[in-house]
Length: 298
Image (cartoon, rainbow, N blue to C red; front, side, top):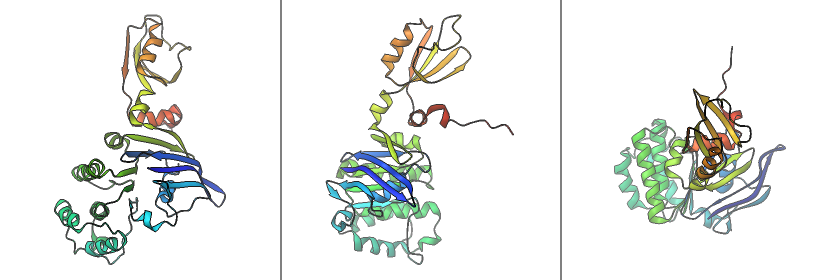
């Protein structure tokens, strides 16, 4: 289990983390989402032991991460800007990783060579961005980590390779019980792989639930009211409402059954619940219309 409690981190008086708390269950895939500047990369650097919190605690399986070499041998990460030594080849970096991770699997390294099909003698800095990211996955997955921390992990990969690396990661989750935390702006992709989601903003984790609970706590309802009812009744507790022709689309913080029952009092001609995507939940949890794309007239 990964657990951060009331983590505070200040940089020159700015609170990058303002009491952030999150819990990632063992063997789960946890998606951490939020707008730019929300504090996602900062909390990730605490989870990997790069930053030390000013207050609060950061633990994995009940052990503090900071200055804990034995625990860090079980943590592997792929940051958004993956590090490698400038003159190094793939095989050079493999030796570097093997020196830090006692469980580094050469057997797996050889098997993944067939998956990624990159010449291990090539200098990494001369590879494309997508190929460098493939190398990062190749080496990181050979570390056989208990905890895998990913920050924008598939940025730069083509669709086929994205599917391949997610297949490898999910295989580790199901076969080895690997606990994965992934931060990404690609919410559609997270929806396919995550079973838990945390929504972060202004240095705090605002919402943290299983994806199923998150989707069950908010509903999109498409409603056609009877003739004469042109506006959404003020009594309906809507987070956001829009209209196309006679069809009103209502976003409500409740489950579908509750929303349909509430709207039925107005005898609608049509009332149909539509599942929300993770992207829509993200927008409305963070303030609804304030986070929508705005038309600017020049």
